[in-house]
Length: 280
Image (cartoon, rainbow, N blue to C red; front, side):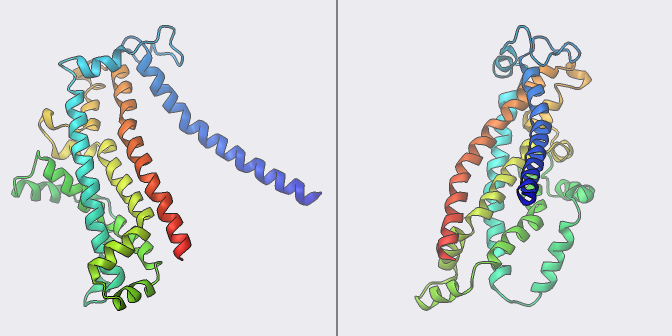
């Protein structure tokens, strides 16, 4: 009886924590969505449940010539797709090298990546700014993408390398006996088994340009090259008269491409986990 009571209390506590976390996450999202449906632009007259809700702010984002929202959306999608693709390719290859090969300087290189992982990219932003200025990559998507790709390389490298280390080397040896080369082993064996962690890296690197504000603020200068985070900021500063409702509508629409990418990668994540479980 005491054991069943203890189990019931543990389950109730878990559900209570999940409920609290759900409320903490849902509440600001609900407010943002309701703000986007409120008429007007003032922050102080907003209601959680507007009396006369309207989709005029969503329409304004795509139809008003002064909005530039579609341009910012396109810029962010370009940066996000290239960043995700480049990060997955570079991180996978580098992680494969560190996981499967032994070479001079390997241990020191791992320690270097570990040390770099402890410091945020913004700590070296002055040096990065001067370097990009030297090679004429300021105010370009190329410079911004390079910062995203190589700035997230240390953390993503350890994620993928740690996952590859859990895959038995016997698979590599068996493939070598059958005549497979290093690239065949990498693409035909390791990549399918490591698809869960690769999907995580792809999702996180795709999401980064949608939410990052400081890096584009430092690198990008031309308004026509703004990303969504940088462009939406202009809706709530003094110059643009504090359009909080337009800002809320723009932030809600950010979730669409992220949700689509998550749903696409979820299929690979589940299949990768199933294959790894049956083959292990």
